Amino acid sequence: MLSLEAAGRALERAGQAHVLRFWPELGAEQRDRLLLELSQVDLGGLRAHCEGAAQAAAAPPRSLDRRLEPVPPDSIGSTKTGDGRTLAGWREEGQLQISKNRVGVLLLAGGQGTRLGVQYPKGMYDVGLPSGKSLYQIQAERIHKVQEMSDRKYGSKCTVPWYIMTSEFTLTPTEKFFKENNFFGLEPSNVVMFEQRMIPAVTFDGKIILQSKGKMAMAPDGNGGLYQALVDNKVLEDMEKRGVEYLHVYCVDNILVKVADPVFIGFCVSKGTDCGAKVVEKAYPAEPVGVVCRVQGVSQVVEYSEIPPETAELRGPGGELVFRAGNICNHFFTRAFLQEVAEKYKDQLKQHVAIKKVPFVDSCGNQVTPTKPNGIKMEKFVFDVFPFSRTFVVFEVVREEEFSPLKNADGAAKDTPTTARNSLLAQHCSWATAAGATLLDAGGKALQSPASVSAGNCSPAFEISPLVSYFGEGLEDILKERTLPTPFILDEKTAKDLQARIPPQRDSLDRVGRGGGFVQE
Ligand code: UTP
Image 1 (cartoon, helix red, strand yellow):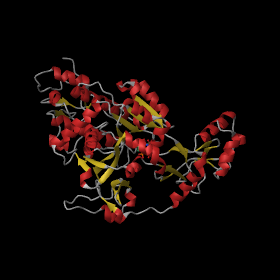
Image 2 (tube, rainbow, N blue to C red):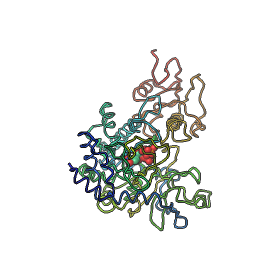
Image 3 (cartoon, rainbow, N blue to C red):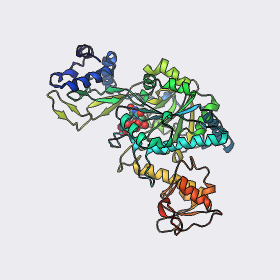
Image 4 (tube, rainbow, N blue to C red):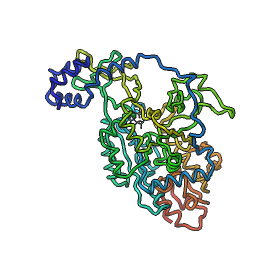
């Protein structure tokens, strides 16, 4: 471990000697912990980090206006405009790659989830579904299903390894949660957790913030810390050993995420791309989402704050927004591209400034909880590697089908547990009605017509386990001409029970219990 003398010299050189200000007051254990923390920081780059953070926070926001162009149409695929045959072709290609063990998924789960405000990893959050499933469980079951679909189609016994990037905040509880839940039925050796780096938060004048007398205020280095973490933890070597060539990378908080989406993967593989981004159409010009576009010919995500309103409002001949490709943190990378990023580009990634309230000890040793932002956290973003792609593509999908993130606690205007739950239930309800089911409300009255259900106007508590259907497929055999009460959970057991009753008939409340349990006959 680092010696006190070496730490002192390095901190002095970086203009951060105050970090050891309370050293004489620390006990042996606190001293060891502080030295360990310091030994994990890039001390050589510390001055640049701290000064760079202060300068970046003080710099005016850039405005990109006339240099922006949309991504050219020949680099765009879409589930909205693609015809049935084309989509089926992409799906088949994706499933083929999956069946050959060439596809892995990578979850970004190192964030602190400060807006949601829970003290545990966001993936463990239960948004209040009838099943009580967490986000992690929903994703695990989708992986299960996608493997099974490829196995059935190609007679394989394939594996989609699940790489999970965590941070100091999320690793231990995530590991414990997976163990307690028996890895949700996945093979533990195919779930690979690794940790991203942490970096110190600094004041507006570039000084490291002390969270307590013996601890720096540390934060994960952003989801773009992925590329360093892949190297630190030899993850690319693991992928190579398993023969994984294609990676689907996504955020933990999107309840509708199609993990290892065969259609998206198939599209990207057919296009021969090294890097792709799934996007949804912006809901309105000023919506605060990053936009995937080109800046002087280079593909990238431009933050909404960098686009002048008149540019954001530009419309094409059909009335559609010109800059409509909203980034949803859902990406495709080849392993070769990630390797190249790791070797050549990861240190060139832009640093983004996040201004936060960071609790600290003042110079007299008093603990202070700030009432206004006092600190800068620097973050790298996963999408900032797009400019290094040679064959970048965009894949547009329908927001209601694929994107509903959990960002805020209930009470906020959007992206809450309630909106996430309702998005999932509305989707399942529309799948069920499209498959020919009639759903009853609590009073036994038939719920809306399939048309209004699919328009997202209702979200009765009808939940479909991903183990039964990945994206609405295979439900007709189970649900056609059934009348079912809500709340109802269609899981493997209730699906089997329903199928056992052939021919389909009008089930009634005296035969089917609420919540998906069957009443004894
Ligand atoms: P967000 O930017 O929404 O951050 O992360 P967050 O940590 O979930 O929430 P807030 O901002 O503190 O409220 C988008 C995705 O990137 C991951 C998150 O776990 C989430 O899946 N992420 C974020 C990381 O993996 N590492 C990070 O350092 C930051």
